[in-house]
Length: 198
Length: 198
DNA sequence: ACCTGAACACCGTTCAAGT
DNA sequence: ACCTGAACACCGTTCAAGT
View 1 (cartoon, helix red, strand yellow):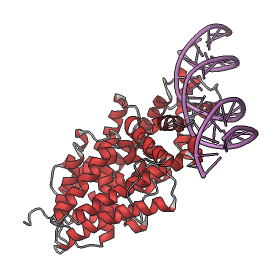
View 2 (tube, each protein chain N blue to C red):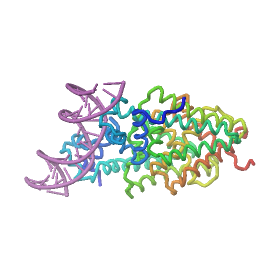
View 3 (cartoon, rainbow over the protein chains, first blue to last red):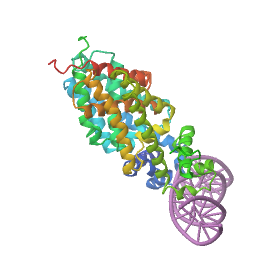
View 4 (cartoon, rainbow over the protein chains, first blue to last red):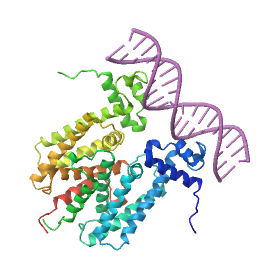
């Protein structure tokens, strides 16, 4: 099957909501504005989504799938493990910086409805990232501890650096000059962990 | 001077907003609800704060000061450096878990007005935490790299672990079973960094 | 199956007026 | 200096009705 040239109304609503998130943030995504962009009445979205939250969940699910794809591309790109890890981190950082409100929707918004399909998409992107971490461990770039725990820690640190930056909390005076520098320091330190020392 | 037994209306508004954040989250902090708790009309808050955002900024500033105090207490408590670091992290985690909406207001909300006094309070709490990190470096518990950068990295990782948990993103299947475990792993790895190896 | 128009309760904010 | 009541524009959501 070729993809349809025209989006369904439902897809158009998701795309319009994404666009509004990018241009004006969460605040700007009102059902009325979304409906107007698509050219339907202010409550037509309710024929496709039970609530505003459900529409935002659909935006998030689509983006989680795209992130998983980006991570999987790095797994199969044929680079060495460390390059794959750095590229994956860079891809996430670029997504966050260029789509701030969408990043926060996916990784921080406490109002995001935890529908099973969304949780599945979120876990999928995490696990794709985890494959890269595991490969780094096999190549000795990262310490040989439990792979899932290590992936969780790196994911958390990466998220923390990104979230502080997006929230305007990451000033130079807090040692958080750039997300890249913070993440680079993390990888540098992890690379030099020696658990056989003591 | 002894503290007054009665709060001014302004202080009452800040306290009421804090309470509403704890009980119902950001969503529940409407100026109308705040005013009702204090017993004034729905727009009386405007005699004390120019906007809802400014009221929330006042809540944040007070809490940043309290966090700085908690960190400074650990500095002067007479414990060894590692205990001070672990206690400081535990204090932040406890604050986050018991006051989720307030934690996110301080460390994540992009709408928080960056007034100079608020930025100053935020930086103060960061620097108090940094003093503990520096002491750990002097005692050889943490790697001897630039102190501010290391503090920034630890702050970011701590924030990431907390924020993912508060947002419901920290499942066991993502290696994020508990904030304490993730932070414990971070400290464990940092403790075993050996930059003289290669 | 999908859409519309009117309506409801709620909100942040403004304003004229009161003490 | 501090407060009140009415009002405005806006929002999510519901409902009766249309094709």
